[in-house]
Image 1: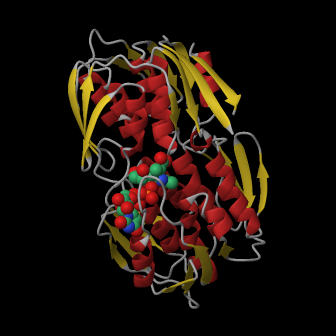
Image 2 (image 1 turned 135 degrees about the vertical axis):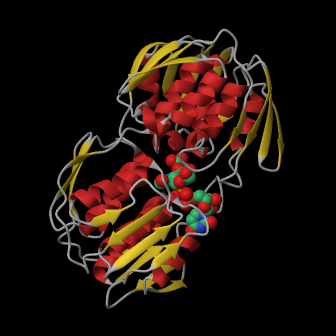
Length: 420
Ligand code: EPZ
């Protein structure tokens, strides 16, 4: 297994190009199940989760032509509709094939994704919504068996909780359903917005894009023609590099981004004393005189994103004063805390809240990545810790960050990928 060796403290300088968004690419790859043509996805992030979902589709019989940063997918010759455990267990977002498979074929079997490090990650809201659309859903031997022999029909879905992949699943199911589907309490994340925009440009009538109420008029199983498109930039990768600049108190420009997808992150950095130069497709983070402690509550878009919580909690160890961080979306998303404590951080956990004392001079040590965003937080900590840090189990990182160590090396970090 690989690990990262990072020597700190380090300064960064220069600029970094952000890749396509993993969490936009995943539903857009599933969406190719609704197309009657070969679909080209550009600005594809070259990360493990993307390869996993593409492999799932090819296992179903789709033809796939994967380049470094694009893929062509043709699902016309699909031969089966069973998403098996061996793949789904490695990437729970595979559940995104459930809605499109069921709506197109009227039947499918998708392995239950199971939980993950950050929480139980249920899919009850996905399943309840599909039942409202006429599906018969049963759980057998760890699989969701879904049937809708006459196709799905439009319904008024009111999500009890805002769910990003739940909204994406139902948007795709509704696209081929009979009649109108209303989704109330829909997720507003930019990744859901792009899915709706691509479907709309393919001829699916969707109202309310970007709002919490979506109205989708289904085609009654007529497949659509989807033109090539460009995946939006990864706002979480961008936010992670903004934190890298901040924690090393360096001036760094983050390029090829959508600043409007990062307003909560930018605002929090400004509250901490950093100044940001925002242009159309870039943000330059400039050093702070002194880093101020802040309070953070993670919530759905456009509020502060849970996927940036670990990175900001790490940054708060360098702030002057005490920061309180409340994680409202996932029940176990503080596993980076015990690893940060190994580096000397002074953090107290109580329920879903972390109290972070700063400013603490961190010292390098061996630490272990536990989930995707926690592992990026450990890399940030290692860049400011004095001495050498080894970050182990970085397969977590490889799921969602394109060439992280190469991008950081280019910015001047002393970071190497080595073999255990
Ligand atoms: C998406 O996960 C992202 N993943 C996550 O990013 C992100 O953290 C999360 O949204 C929240 O923004 C992808 O887009 C592939 P949810 P998702 O359904 O859709 C509860 C990363 O690091 N819930 O919006 O699975 C759930 O338990 C990953 O890139 C139900 O109770 O999250 C949670 O408390 C990590 N029942 C809340 O809703 C359901 O049926 C939000 O979950 C579905 C969700």
